[in-house]
Picture 1: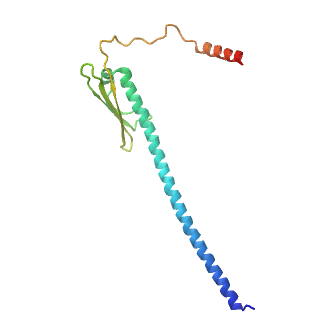
Picture 2: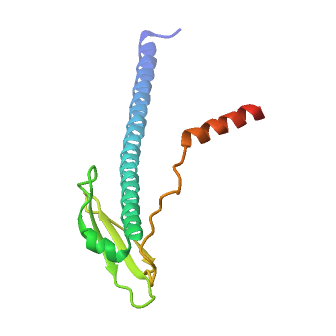
Picture 3: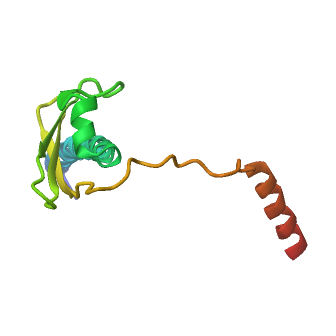
Length: 162
């Protein structure tokens, strides 16, 4: 038979073992939570940077598209080569550097946008000068386009085909 003291001793050993298990589980849980919080903060930071890169790419595309559409010489004459971007991106700044073309060499265009956190994104391209070309023609279709009529025709054709 077991005595009372041996039963108490066994219970004490079991509860001591359980306490150690709880402490180890708590430490493992704390390590897991710390890792999870670290990964979450990194993911949020990377997402912000990704969004910023998307905005920068769109602003650079718009700047370079304007230079290409208007021509490097006209762009300088019409627009400022640096300043704040248009709303809703007025906390961003831009600058456009256009290196003059010599003869038939292309213009070297470098567009830079700077984010509110002072990160700069840039993109450069070459744009050929207009040599003896007539002024830009009016790009108006000879007759108005009936988009609704075209859509109805397409719907009729699809219904006939089915």
